[in-house]
Image (cartoon, rainbow, N blue to C red):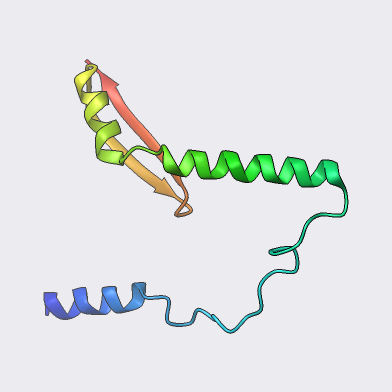
Length: 90
């Protein structure tokens, strides 16, 4: 029974209803008409990719917190996007 529940959970986690036949967003392969906005958008994307390239695994952050004297450390995720790290100082 436990394996069946686990299998159903995995099945529900799959993006079955995702629609890959949608066309790309209008601005996805175009430049913005205003050069200033285009420069800002490029800078934002460079920051975004640099952030992704330099991210640290959650376990590394949790271990660093433990090593610096925190106990009961934990990491929670909100909106599948934001991580919140918490712990208690000894």
